Image (cartoon, rainbow, N blue to C red; front, side, top):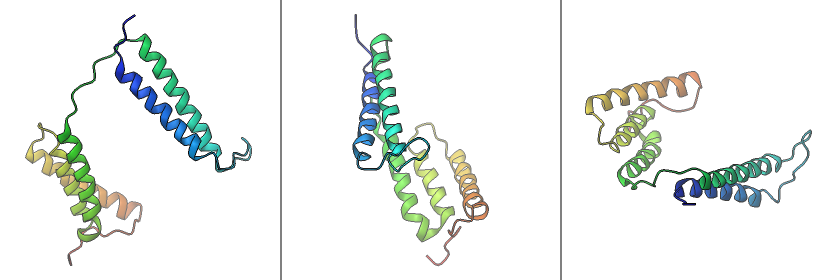
Length: 149
């Protein structure tokens, strides 16, 4: 038997590790019962479910041939993190329109296939939709545009 499904093995172990962490951090919370749940009930159930899912994925990794792990591309990861940081820094100072548009533009720089015109259109539509959804529909206390800088 030849093992070549490292990707599933690592994913299963990661699920199980998160489940174990949920059990560990939730151990001091009162469990309660199914009819009267305590604050530790949900973390405990989810922790055991993650451990079970991780175990199934680990077992599957030994039974099914997988694809090799591909090379890590840093540019998309860096640009997505930069987009999140830019949004966090811009949303209060310049408003939701500018922050959402900047996040879309920075996020698109992570792809080599992004076209400038499509990126600008997507940034404008996303910014307008964000303002419409979060400010006008959901009533979040945000300003669409901060003119005072």
